Length: 272
Image 1 (cartoon, rainbow, N blue to C red):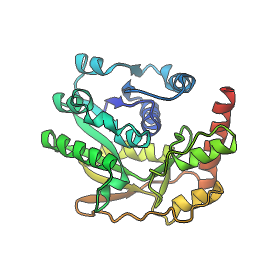
Image 2: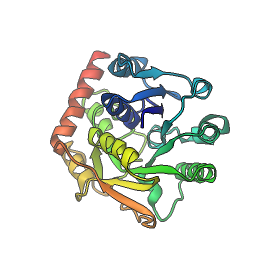
Image 3: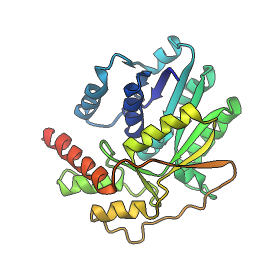
Image 4: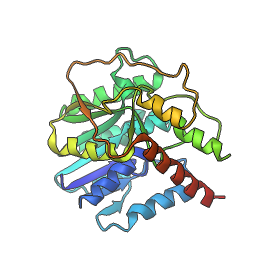
């Protein structure tokens, strides 16, 4: 994997994956579909990676026009879902055609773990499931990486953890409702490293990334003093053809969430 196109490069998980790729010396072309975030936040993210000579920010049109050989494409449907932007998957001229029309060396799609549930009935999840099925018709060699709740610096306020932190700072907005999975939780930097390892070393297929520990989401919620009563939603996972991989944890929950808290205070205090 020498060259990677990141679609939604300034979104939460994809941004951390991009930084990890750049740290490995891998060339990244990044495109942001759209962002509702404050321009100051996007500018801050650009500053974190923009000085790296291996990073280039491009448009969707430029990806097709100036495609290089042997490129991997990474699309974070997970981030779209958590930003309430899954409707982009319905636009045939956007993401679907980008994946379908180009001979990518590898296709990687990050997916919320709720899509492994035995029953898919909510409209957002049906949209994602349909997108994946249509993509599989044209290319069956896809890495589908299923993610539970991911926490750490730059987590959006559509996650309960970040919403709670910003509310404590009196910077919170009305919470839109619980979308994240509450059965597991992973630190974003550890997850980004494992995502790259899977892409580089594993065959295309379905992979569920897990902590390997019980009640991780609840432990995070307890650290943030969130009343999690009644929020735990256990998935009835479709196991067939699914590989489960445990992330290597480098920091305790308390350290990872403290990093998230301190980052939020730094970023949002600067915006006052």
